Length: 303
Ligand code: NCD
Image (cartoon, rainbow, N blue to C red):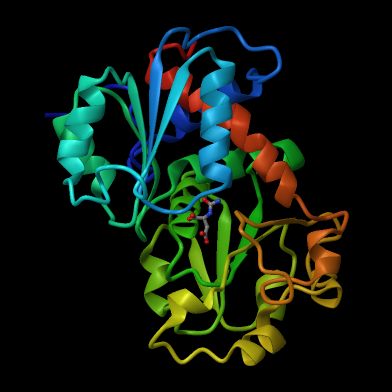
């Protein structure tokens, strides 16, 4: 079965025009004054992995459009009893799901679901693969701050290897000819990352990565993900942590983004996290209108 119309499985195969249309539509979304575009619809939030921002903003987005939401987490559901992904999918469809939002530790899980279930499936993060709604809300945030993608340079620093956020961001930004620089040690930013999308460059030197950049996107560096890798955290901090002195190397009006959760004292200092150039909470805030647009589009309501 082909995925249902309105599914959002990844950014890689999405056309630039469709992305712009969705971002434009998102600008018209306001959770406090929303038309009930999803009145009476049921949005199932199927979370096989921890989540704070993504889950709460999908839930608020769905509810503000008039939908009912049901949250199913691995813990406390039949998933814990060993039910397969597809059997859980058939079950939530049978109780009346109109949209399935799914986060899963395995790359491709949303695709499998979409191939077997006849309702739109939204990928809320699948393994190391993609996180399309995050890329869209990040693009929305960049456009709100920089007006256009034209001539922009975006620097991504941190654990790119383990980041579905980075992968989706590279796919999206490269469709608009944004210059993308990936920065970090070879274990976290392998050379092969340049093949991710056109226009991607890799550097090990933070000065080189930050010079003349408009947007700095920081990614989580978490020890649980680094098992078996030779990463010395004090050395990472010494070479790559975002500090006020390093931020000065970027353009004066550069913004600092981070999909969260942030680890103060590791990827960035508190001065940066709470500083005037940070857009970290703005990203979270923008997650709601962006996900409203994604859900309305899933139900064919994007005009
Ligand atoms: C990210 C994720 O889950 O991929 N967070 C998010 O959704 N906002 C980033 C991460 O966990 O590192």
